[in-house]
Length: 390
Image 1 (cartoon, rainbow, N blue to C red):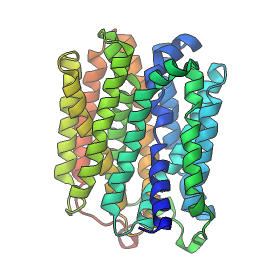
Image 2 (cartoon, rainbow, N blue to C red):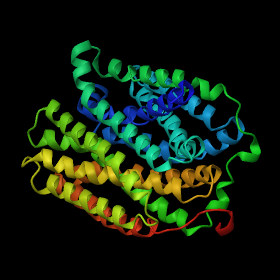
Image 3 (tube, rainbow, N blue to C red):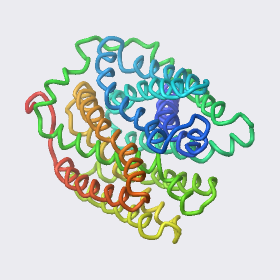
Image 4 (cartoon, rainbow, N blue to C red):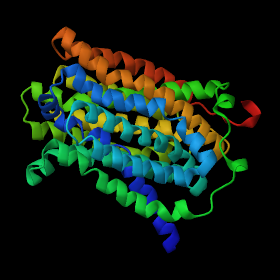
């Protein structure tokens, strides 16, 4: 591998590592944030909800930026804005907390949409492998953030604000590594993404969008509330954080393996359905026996959710005929999908408040998973999304 290729891969991987810490880093510190800022459970869940809403609302920014400045410069801009956002939310006051979170999430939204197209543009002959690497890096970033936030807080004595602001450092490192790609000559408008309106006419788009949104909803419920569920059942904060980290680490392995295997087949239906069933089993374990082998439930949940996320992104990269259509499909699927997902953490918190326990919200998530499996059945079937069938 040449130095140029090595820098490309390194920059791509480190950029992907930055796509979840700004969100995943909130959950282990949520109780402390709520006490410090004076938030209710619904207000605490709203931190993640605000971020996921931004992932949906601002996803269409990516095709516009990519057309004007290119995919690579869009990615660089996103990394710099993430750094600014996590630094801002470390300032005093609830408005800064929500504003900084929203700013970071807006950047992540643009990067989420751009990354599958970057895979198709820079790695056209290795889409399966690099999709797996990409998703694994995203999940690894979430797992690392979940695991280290409390230990770093204890080691530095900075408190949740200072520790949150430290997340700007890896974003700036990724920006430095990606700088050579951003400085290279960008593709002209003729190679830019097609208008999203053309993609909207395909049924494939809506199957993929439903899969993306529903699997994201169940993922962000785990990310926002899983440590709190275990805390309420008597586990210490560090152990609750480690369990969240465990399920995220398992997702790394699933994310690496599943796209390589599923991408070899014309149909991804068996993999999508199997991933959904495993996610159901993991949630059932948390519902029925949260303190009985919780590590097992986290492993099963991690395999299911990691595979579901990887498959959704793999399908986004495989179905379109070219990188331009990938960007358009990615914008629709991730924008609408994350708006759906944004309801998860907030409604989960509201159901917790209304019911006074965790059973009702967990049963509601199991219902969502049934619909996710059905959507995955249709999204996983062979199809080509391109100019001929838009």
